[in-house]
Length: 127
Image 1 (cartoon, rainbow, N blue to C red):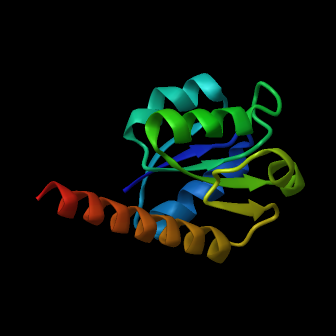
Image 2: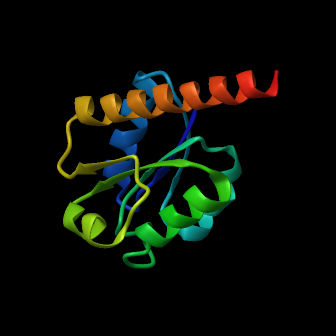
């Protein structure tokens, strides 16, 4: 399953990539901004998205586009989690920074399990 990493801090993006790969995911990115992220969006089932990107606090707007247009499961990874709770619905999970490897791996696993369940239900309805 493909995970898109949307994070403009290089060390954080590297850490998220390592966690995702170690958990058995394929990684797209990292993307540091909206346009880069949208270039990967069609291939991503899950996205780890920071609020503050290279263009400013554009993460929530990007997340809305990923969810609505590409049906991506969004997990926010952010130092300002209260900003998500105040104005955004639709995120699968919110992981506050600083985070542990375990927090990210568990959220990715839950997102994968949820998506696999949805994909299996869709296949059953098509039969």
